[in-house]
Length: 223
Image 1 (cartoon, rainbow, N blue to C red):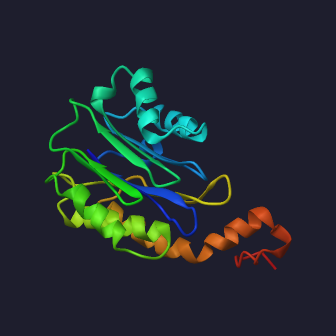
Image 2 (image 1 turned 180 degrees about the horizontal axis):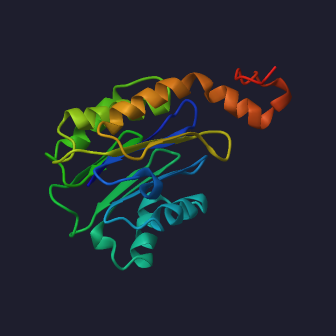
Image 3 (image 1 turned 180 degrees about the vertical axis):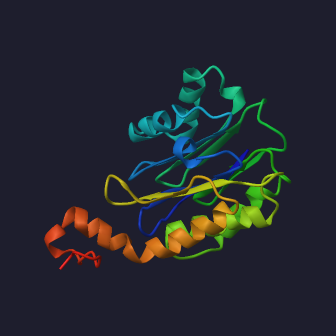
């Protein structure tokens, strides 16, 4: 029901992921990032406990293969899940349980990984990895390009209705956390939201860290 991509930016230290699904509100329960730590994705018949737990173990210094072992111990139903773990150094690992739905596939690339289930073909993760590795610019843009490439390669067997894009950087909170929870073209809609949000990212960080120096809001009632 889902395909996703995770990646890091070596130049900025940003970590992030993009995800889409035929299910509603996919990003709310499947996508997790933490500044300086990494990315965790939990999908298929998902367990939202796994994302925060994976980030916890990565924050303790565990490598992705060690994290996966801890997740296997913590969730006796892991055979129903797909899991992706990518740390801030770019080391990644994926897992697809034997109960993963339909055509399912994963791939680990250079500082990135991609996964999917109920796919139109096993080439979807390959398309996402190739697009990410050959793209440049802001990490969120690269992740969105990769998600779009997955859709172009066939995506899910059926239509998708929700999508999300999350990137964490120097602040402890995500600097990009955009969601389309239900839409007939969620990736296209996510692209529109990202293009509106991108020019304002630094303003919102400055308002949190240096409010006296932040730009005006530019809305009625703000002098």
